[in-house]
Image (cartoon, rainbow, N blue to C red; front, side, top):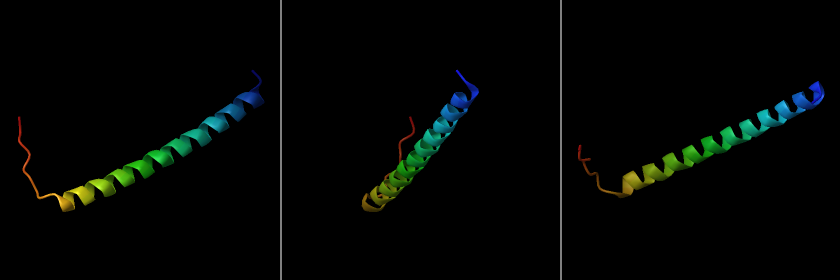
Length: 50
């Protein structure tokens, strides 16, 4: 494998990682929003410790 080809693949992987990280963060934000909506609609219950 040539150095230029290797560098190009690294660049593509970096872009993919950025995209995945962004999607993950968006998903976590949506999850937080949904959980906060659920918390508001449900009466507060105390969790049992087992």
